[in-house]
Amino acid sequence: MLGDTLLNLPTLDALKYAYPESHITLVCHPSLAEFLEGYPAIDRFLPFQAGRRKAGFSECRTLFSQVKRGNFDLAIVSNSRKDFHLITSLANIPRRIGYGRKWGILLTDRLDDKKFTGQKHEIESNLELLAPLGIQVRDPLFELPGSVQDLHEAERLLVSERLSTGNPLVLLHPFSSDPRKCWPIENFVNLIKKIKDNVKVDMAVIGSEGERNCAGELIAKTKLSIANLSGKTNLRTLCGIIRKSALLIGHDSGPMHMAAGVGTPTVSIFAKFSGGPNPVRWRPWGAGHVVIHKDLNDLSVDEVWRAVIMSFPGLTGESRFPLSRE
Image 1 (tube, rainbow, N blue to C red):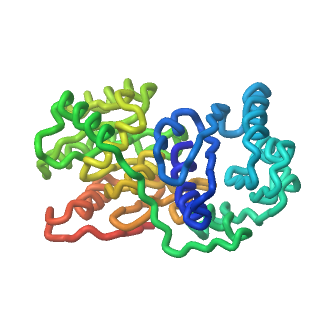
Image 2 (cartoon, one colour; image 1 turned 90 degrees about the vertical axis):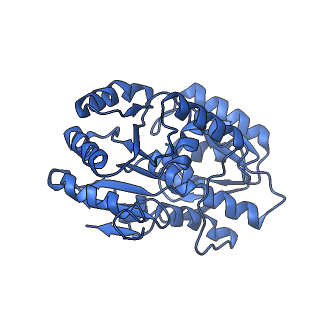
């Protein structure tokens, strides 16, 4: 949810640049509306809290009423859903651009959905939705703006957790909703020990409220002073903390894309399995990231440690540079 939305921001930026007088409304989860409040390309939000694949009747009815009242001239549907296609059609939006599947016949402009082939990054695929409007973007930027208040909130939390020591801060996000994507926790425990034995850094685990206990168990196994920030931040404060960090280590996830958007390097672990996430499509956008794509049963702590070394300029005399490892 978080990553999917963030990777649509360059499309909104390009649309706003092409039509500076336009009024752009984003349909998204309420927590993302709060996080993206003030984003330059977005004028208004329509919160939509239904799950990724299915929405209830009441949610769809509310969204339809809001869309109908909006008198929109254009709808761009980047998330192919039957309810979105039906709502934009019934609301009589004159031009509706999206992918020709899941009732795509209700759209006025239909593109072939080739995302599943994994030949392009999600940002590049999303930008193709602007092609029917004659808008083409080369070398898109992906940047998340930050506010002074967000940074102050992040700093207050870091101080309270004794993480404002002047040492580089390394964040770990070892969780995923899909257990197949998860590198074993014991490996993260040994990686933390290796990092702390070799580099003078502060470390913290980030995650949701529901992941707080798992994070606590991981930290307890290290027998080291590692902060547990899971469940202690909203998205804006989390973004501020990531912005202040030297490195984020974890699986492909929303926080990984958040780090890419604020220029924080990542060591991103992509599990290689049939039907698994393709790093060509889902890798962190931009330079400064190390991407590891491997069967997690074969991924050693030493391999990830070497990736960490690459991410710290000056640590071993090596400069930071992008690397994809198959």
